[in-house]
Length: 194
View 1 (cartoon, rainbow, N blue to C red):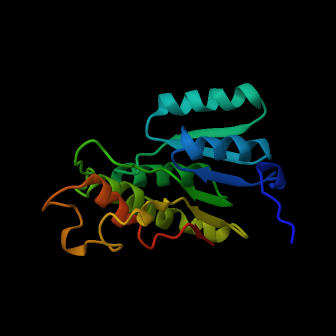
View 2 (view 1 turned 90 degrees about the vertical axis):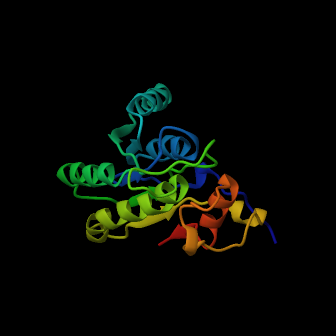
């Protein structure tokens, strides 16, 4: 049996598609923005820091001057920001073919809380994306063949703590270990949701 490695070259044209990527200013989000815009997609890049978001757009435009890119502010650690983003998105767009939930916080130097007082990794990586997806669901549902992709980590395999969610101490008020807090939130998180 012959196997073939799948690469970005295998991605078909994305002409006419609107794709929203959270955390698009660095890492996997930036790479996805580069590749998908090179395939003709209109990519809506989100970042909580607009300066670094604009730097990412400049980087992409250096290689692909015709890239269709928009930058929108979105802080997934703040429900108010997510609601504001949703309103702005709904005012501007009627189509969303793909939502890529990519942004995330990993191993903060110390225990931090979101504006709504959730542990920062759980609040951003999970609750923030859950709220965002729910607020954009109407546009996704009205766009034929739309998809939601959720980036995840294999960190749960590190066996740091039980592979479960600590419902009795979601915010790790009783003692904080950034690795356990991140790892336990990865348990059971789907990689792709269609």
